[in-house]
Image (cartoon, rainbow, N blue to C red; front, side):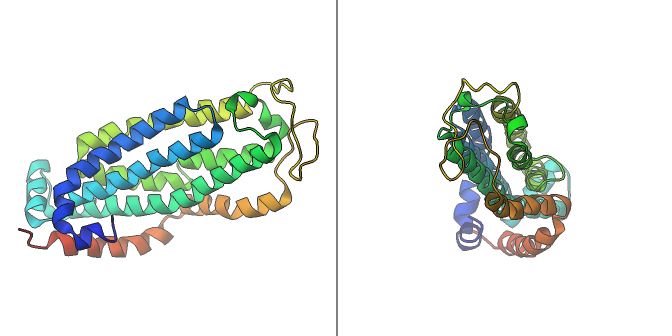
Length: 273
């Protein structure tokens, strides 16, 4: 969408922008609601990707609504701001969308890896088979907490800035759809805090729920075993990346912002028929 649609097909981008905005906001909310209904941990993480990609589409769609000089002038008049503010909001929305794509790669990659870690030991992904794992697998619990809260958009972790910039830009350009999209943040908190953390990690561990545990190399185990050293080596770069981007997003935003500004300035000055 960013690399091809806006610069190559600006007419189509302007025409379909309202649909992109609507689909993005709906994807955020719908994906979050579907996550709440899942009983399989891997499916839950998979559907969370639908919600997170909704932020990308919402940001790009919001920027596409002002990709002509007339649209910029109309938006500036409607919202009582200068055309420069409108273009800044479009740039911010694109920055948020680009940052969300990058963050999604490291956050969801870590979550899927952690699902694989527990599946290798429990041989099931059903949420009903777990409970009380925090006391049994503290490293696994800690790593999952970091990745899950990054996915939720907790300040200080990678997911926060992408959502912040996307909504900051979208609220200035498509306020009603942006407000609708914020419902997804609330529902995301439900499936992160309740479906994952409460169901899998908190409460008392009950061995009768699931008694087919093995070690990571397939040997029988009396209960869940924690993340192995070689698995931690794989996960730590992703976790460290979540903290670095959460604390210092400028490193990526400076790179994204240059391209986003050039794209917005180029496309918004085209004289479209």
